Length: 400
Image (cartoon, rainbow, N blue to C red; front, top):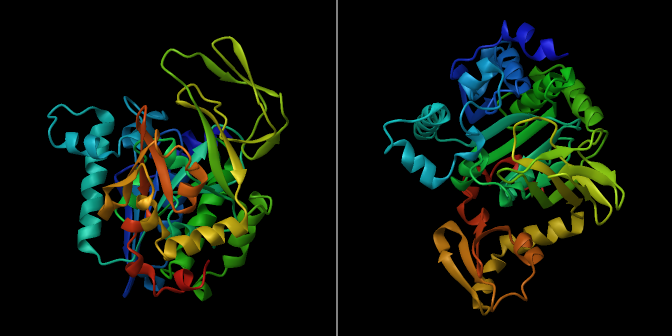
């Protein structure tokens, strides 16, 4: 199995920055696929090579890009060489790319990707769709991760796999968070376990469905459309639930962390179950919880996450409140003020606004970041979303 995703597959995989560009004969969307942002996660890169090199370009509308992520790490079959490329996409780090003459490996990769993205966005009018492929170290059903903006929710709802919201609240510098802050549809697709053969098949299915749902490819021109839907539906065990991240075990510097064997993503684990060992102390669950992305590789700072389902009613309420920009009323409350209104950032003084529940902010699309002992900075993706780019498209108008 491992050979399939490394040595044997590498013979047919292109690790140059632009895997392939397809320019359709008719106008249409701009769809950008990323593979291998982590170098030991090769399924997406393999799938992009496979699909884009077999498409009939005469049937394509718009433009499709296939982009390799961390090329040096891909060739070395390592998650990264010096730094995690999927934790570098902050404003400070991007600014540093143009000020530091001695960039390390991942910063060189980031600079090339950054300049390529800027050129793609400048050259095309859109609508834009960015898809980033990943795999996990643990066994998992395929799933989508998204920043919690309605454009992402609506588009991702077409795919027959579970969706996970809010992971950006626990991470700093993911590529898709940067793209979402620019206002575009951006989805992460975790296709399965690193070395599992089905991870490639799931990625292939996701690429084809993306092309159909974006109207880059007419469904009548994809004879296996129903098979690809069935592929993902079956692999996901018919789970289309939307979840929210509630906890992340961050592995601190010097911490010796090891998951207990046998756990997998989306597994419902009983209260008091021993799930990991940290610095020779056993970690037990305080409640019955759904486990998410337990770590089974040597490199990584995310030990495990906990998630919980979000009801359809809450999702509908959330969408309605955002459409009416209910968050304008938040700044009327004591301890809440605008930090950067055009970019949807508010500041919360925890001393005077501690009565406000995190759930309320999540309903309105805000995700928090602690900036001091007494202050939270919360960012809202809705205010920067380029809804006008998507508002007339079928998937936007008719999805809740």
